[in-house]
Amino acid sequence: MKEPSIYDRQDLVFDRKKLPDQLYAVGAGGVGWWAAFFAAMAGVPEIILGDYDKIDETNRGRLPVTNKDVGEYKTEVLKREILDVRPDCRVICVNEMFSGPFLESMMSVLSPSGKKVVVLSAVDKSSVDDEIREMCKKRGIKYVRCGVEGNLVTFFTKANQVIDLEPGSDGYTIVPSWVGSSAMAGVFAASLIVLPVEVTPREVNIDKIIKGEK
Image (cartoon, rainbow, N blue to C red; front, side, top):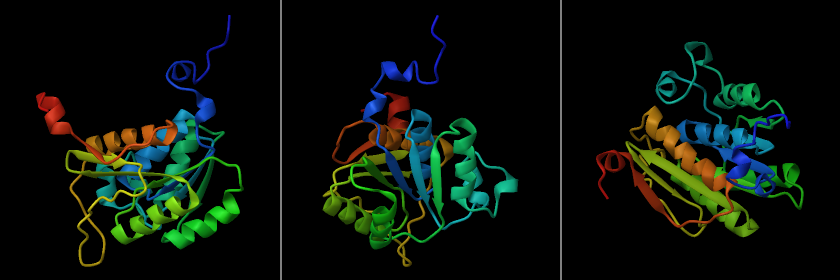
């Protein structure tokens, strides 16, 4: 009798041979954290986590972290969690402020020709997302964008589409969120990462789903 495998049931859903070789998860907060974790569980073999921020008390409302993790880089804590469940996954942490040019320079080193690469933009700064989207469009790389506001999840992959983040005075957007909507957004983002699909902007409202509204 065949020994059970981690991916036995997943293989009934989609072909793992079509998974990307690399995922660049730019932003390791709520959405980026869950998306990278789920992508690793699905079998993405290499993940580059990019975020200069550290865990604080507000993150404990959306992420499976403890008070012992407060003050550590988000990327480092997430790397430990990924390796706990998928020790064969190669995880690289980049604790830097990201921009389109910085990401492109990283790819020139870490992403040799022939690798299937996906970039997840889970940043809070609209100008950085613009740069990442344009870089992906120029290089022909799949771009995934997913965001959450309260119980509303938005997502898309088309590189010529834009989400209006309505940034604050410093260019950043702080939106209401909780673990449920953040994890659901991570599910949609991870699905767009691992499945060979492209979608224009769409949204899912958790409140409406639960209430049975359209």
